[in-house]
Length: 195
Image (cartoon, rainbow, N blue to C red; front, side, top):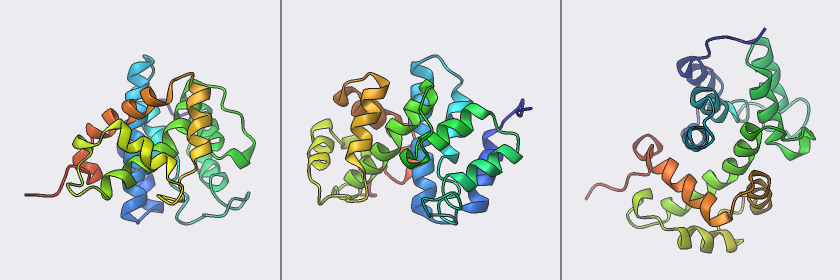
């Protein structure tokens, strides 16, 4: 029986229990912001989608291996034990292409589409002189996406496949995620350097 009253506070406590790295926590917060944006866009459960984004990598720091003894397998077993909804577990499994779990729901597709793009956008902001997401433009992100030497860990193919699965244009998706992350700029540390 899935938990009836999931709370963000509980999800954040779980994230914090397994993740101490500032950059991974900020990544979780950025994906949460993007997932909440898309939940509103699709008239879905914003809290549930946000929690899914917040927890998608919560086990990664302690279990980084791409195996059944690593991420996201360990995390999803923990979520199952804690009675998280199967829809959240399936979405988290599906965001790792090597799991073989298909992305059949809008939640799963949005998580996959937002995950790598949030990383690319964060990296693009952090190299800007003002370090502000508020001045980041679409063309800058697209330029960084084409530059394979920039943020090498970001899987561009996953971003393209995610956009295709969501049925969106790349430009629209990038703009949506920038807008979502702008709403959480302070907690993401992307609100600019003090002048």
